[in-house]
Length: 251
Length: 199
Image (cartoon, rainbow over all chains, first blue to last red; front, side):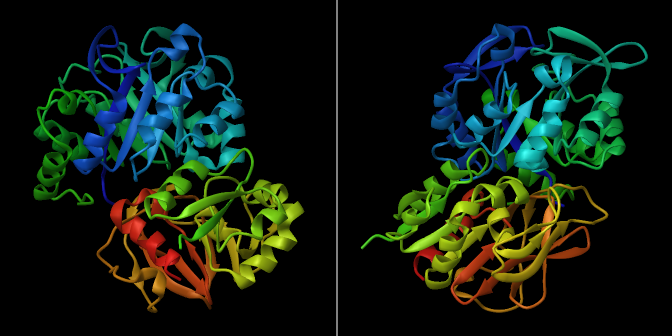
């Protein structure tokens, strides 16, 4: 199976922002322009997360998502503030192929995963897990790494899988936006626990770091944000590097 | 003259916007099909992806008869779930009759690898078909599915996933089905849609 390289856009409408350790925000550009740029660079998918909708308790904004999807002919995953079957449907009717959900499923009602998978198919349901490392366990967070849940990451991903989630997007509260390397142990453990695909996010800090993580943890996809936004590399450069190192990618 | 493509609306599910956009990129006009009479003015029919076999068959049941009649006289393309509902029987959400056009059953994938199958795959082309004009076994197509059509008679191409070969392209006359998403497969996917429009 070819590793998918995904460009991740964290959006605080109307801008793509870069959360540093899920806290401070830096404006990076407009989501439609950045999505198109990464599509042109050879991204396998674009991932769009409205990082403030859950926090502000406001519904997701479909117009900006539709605009972002406009010129993309690759899969487009989006989420942020998704709560209901109608939210899933709204996104799927606005150019989204896979809907990302975290807060509502984790903190309020896990059955939304099951209900959405039944209506739209598992492949359309991506569960975002924001893991925070404590001394001897990993805890799931929500609302962009701000709110604790008390739930254990490994138990939660298994629950999500059993409810019909089609994919896990695995972020790390400790690593996100720091370009300081992946939490390889966490990713490896989650990948080996599950029979659904896992996207490793948070921590891509160098080409070599991505390669090492992929070789050890063997995720199905890697999501890259900061490295791309700061023009430290491009999608094609990442893919060529991985391919040279024996990792299969689609070029 | 521009082709008028009729794109079937599944209600809650279906990735209408993505498919519509991709056909418009190819220069086609796209009408959304909600009733049997919407089928009359269109030249070609497209059944999009994303949804559940049973729910979609229920949703389209009022126009099922008109749809089948039109599919037999107009070039038709089924994408992912759209290809699957062209088949006789599906097992997603319980045993459900499909449109019965392709002699196949749609079953959950059983492989050593991960399901859903998400990502790029290539085609092992068994028979030449106008839908694959200009494309080769090196081209990548994007797959997003947990179910597969089990068919032996109308197979155009197979795709290998974790040492399991499944049907990825079918053709019966001018009726085509693709398990992957051409609207999500960059230029090679757009080429599939152009080939279909040139039918």
